[in-house]
Length: 143
Image (tube, rainbow, N blue to C red; front, side):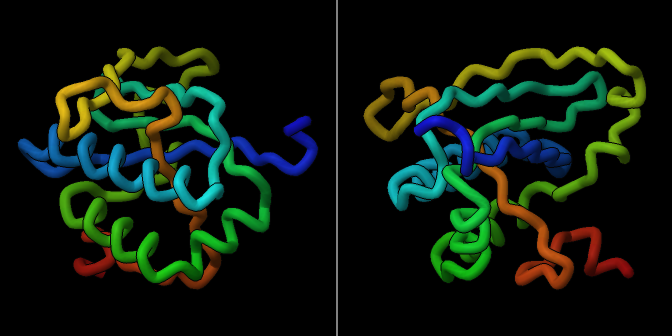
């Protein structure tokens, strides 16, 4: 792919207390699904933790059409809901440590798969947030 149709995305998650490990595993499973359906590219993502413990994943969608396809895929949405059961989806602007022009992330190792081997380097996740979201975050429940 020459990158003309590709889109770079940033996903920011705030895991619930004691739920970072679960969040990373579900992130991994979700990315595997997106990749297996050809929705994200094989470009290696950057996954890190902020100083305030949010998880940030930066990765590449195949195209804007791939984002739309993910937003309407029942299996993708079900997996996203599972992830949002253990972590909140937050705007990057709501992460205090990102208020500086250059902020740092602690790199996170890729989770290991069921066989105990490291997963492929493309494992990260993001679901675009359309104006009318097809899923609800834990924060939405308190509004």
